[in-house]
Image (cartoon, rainbow, N blue to C red; front, side, top):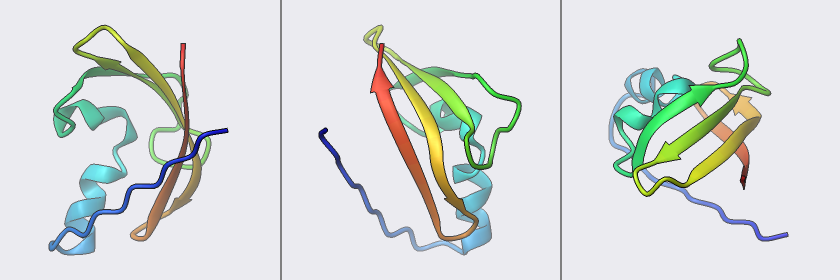
Length: 81
């Protein structure tokens, strides 16, 4: 299985960053290649939340939160259709 890890340092207070990152259903507001998202679960910002990201090139990626530690870390499992 292929795995990748991305880390980014953002120089803002944790609360400001997490207000955006923890809103799992709205990645399309800040990710330049995601046109829209479909939330597949009732839980939006916690463990086991699932979404489909719809890209401008008509590709889709299904994502599931596998780890959620507020103000610290979000882990995702993702796959394509």
